[in-house]
Amino acid sequence: MSRLVVVSNRVPVPEKKGAASAGGLAVALEAALGKRGGVWMGWSGKVNDEGEPGPLAIEQRGNITYALTDLTSKDVDEYYFGFANRMLWPICHYRLDLAEYGRTEMAGYFRVNRFFAHRLAPLIKPDDIVWVHDYHLIPLAAELRQMGIKNKIGFFLHIPWPPADVLFAMPVHEEIMRGLAAYDLVGFQTDHDLENFAGCLRREEMGDMIGEGRFVAGERTFRGGAYPIAIETAAFAEFARKAGTHSMVLKARHSIEDRSLIIGVDRLDYSKGITQRIDAFEHFVTNNPAHRRQVTYLQITPKSRSEVPEYEAMQRMVAEQAGRVNGALGTVDWVPIRYINRSVSRPVLAGLYRLAKVGLVTPLRDGMNLVAKEYVAAQDPEDPGVLVLSRFAGAARELNGALLVNPYDIVGTSNALARGLNMPLDERRDRWLRMMDHLLEHDVSRWCDDFLGDLAA
Ligand code: ADP
Ligand code: F6P
Image (cartoon, rainbow, N blue to C red):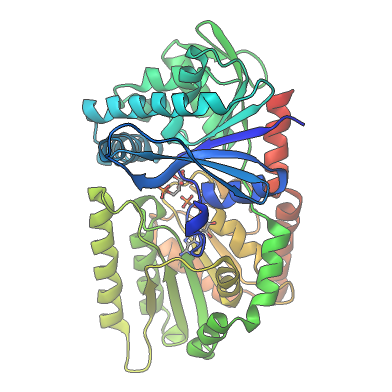
C-alpha cells in the first residue's frame, strides 16, 4: 500500500489535543488517518514573523507523522482570514452579500499555496499518494505539478460547490477552477455539488464532463465524484453508550431535571443558521404553552474565526438574541436557552447528544454536517431522539429518517420541533434504525477507502 500524505490548512495539532477539535475536517481526517497512518502536513496554527521559516515541525503520534509549518501574520491575514474565509467561504455557502474581494488577499492566497508546495515537495516520495483537503488549498496541485511532482494527487472539498451564477461573482473563479483541474480526482460532498461544478466548467466553456465522473478542462482530463464524508459510527455510538456515567453528562442530566432537552452543536458560523434556529425555538415555546417550562434548549457553540468581521458580528448577535429570549420567556426556575461558547470532549458530546430528545441541525447551507450524523449515532436504540435537519445540509441526502426543514421557515422549523417532541416511540425507532443502518455501513473508513481506491485506480 502506498504511503498517504494528507495536506490541510487545519491540523488537530498534537500538543493542543486536550480540547476537542471543532470542525468536520479535523474530526473526520483524524479518524480516517488514525487507522491507515501516514503523513499529515498543514499549518501549525502559529504565527511567526521572524525572518525565514524554520524547518517543518515533525511530531510522531501513533502511526501519524505530523509535519507542521508556521505562517507569517501577513500570510494568515491574507490567505486564511482574507481570501479563504471572506471570499471562498461565503461564495461556496451562497452568500454573495458577505463576499469581500481584495486583490491583496487573493495574491496572498496563491502565494501561501506556493509556499505550502515548496515545503511539501521535499517530503513526497515517488510512490506516495497525496490527498489535499478543502478550499484553502485548491491551487496546491498546480504548484506541485509546476515543481515536477508526478504523483497521484487527489482533492476533497468539505464545503458546498455553488452554481455558476454564484461562483462567477468571484473575480478569480477561472483560476480556481483551473486549480481543480490539476488534480487526478476531485471529490465533492454530494452529487449536487458535482453537478454544480460540471455546470460551472460548461458555462465558462472551460471544459465539460466526458462520461461518468470524467472531466476535460483545457489540456487536462481528470476525474470527479461525490464522496459524502462520514463519522466513526460504531466508535461514537460506543462513546454515547458509556457516557451516562461521565460526571459532566450526569450533571447535565440532573440539571435539566425531567424536561426534554433539545440540542444544537455548531461552530459559531453564519452558515449554521443559529439565529433562525433561536427564532424557531422562541416561536415554538410561545405557541406551544403545554411545552413551556418543559423544554431546555442547549446550544454548544465554540467561537470560530473571530478575526473575521462577519464572525465577530455574529458572536454579538447570537449572544444578544439568546439573552433576549431568556429574558422574555424565562422564569425564576427555568432558563429556556443554555448557550455555551466552548468545545467539549467527544465522549461528553456523545453523552449530551444521547440525553437530547431532539437534535436541531439547521444550517442555511452546509457541505455535509457531521453533527447530524453524530446525533443519530449517539442515540439509545430503545428510546432514540428525533433529528430535525435542514434540507440544505449535504447530510439531508442520506439521512432519510430525519424531519427535514427549510431553516428560513421559522414556523416550519417550530412545527418540526413540536412534531419531534411528540413523536411516538415506534415512529422514532423506525426513523432512527433507517439512518443508523446507513451510517454503520457508510462510515468514515469507507469514505476514505472509496476516495483513495478511486484515486489509486
Ligand atoms: P464544520 O466542519 O462546518 O464545523 P460539521 O458539522 O461537519 O461542521 O463538523 C463539526 C465537527 O466539530 C463535528 O465533529 C462536531 O462534533 C465538532 N464540534 C462542533 N462543535 C463542537 C463543540 N462545541 N465541542 C466539540 N466538538 C464540536
Ligand atoms: O469542515 C469545513 C471547515 O471549513 C474545515 O476546512 C475547517 O477546518 C473547519 O471547517 C473549521 O474551520 P477553521 O479551520 O477555520 O477553524
